[in-house]
Image 1 (cartoon, rainbow, N blue to C red):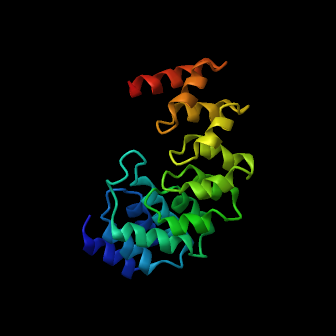
Image 2: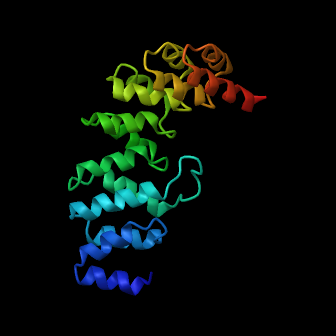
Length: 201
């Protein structure tokens, strides 16, 4: 994809082409930024930029797509009033700076808070506050590597199988907590806990 084609689409206000380009997660981040800066007041473009950043970031290979441009875009989108919905992509991105996650932890939309709760970059002091939040937000805590052990211990007895499942798969959870889940009444949870312990040998 040539920079010239992108520039032409920006000049001609061809948002359909720009949105199509942003669907490609291999589009150079510099070009993503160029499109965003030209159309930061366009809800569709802002939403698609947020989606692009989300697609190109893996939770498992966090350093892969890190760049100062990525971080500056995440900061800008977090406070962009044009598309409030784009905040979910910022909330879940592991490259989002802690101060932005702290700001989003008080977001009025519970999905945004839930994604902050599940974000591996969210510090433990924010996670502790989420424990008294509504269920959709609390559920994100069980799989987060930064969730304090005292909270994970309580989540061991959660009625929701998926909460216990994420906890059983949490590689950062203390071994004694995972050992409790080996005896879980649900076979999927106990198998996940056994697999987790096996990887620690």
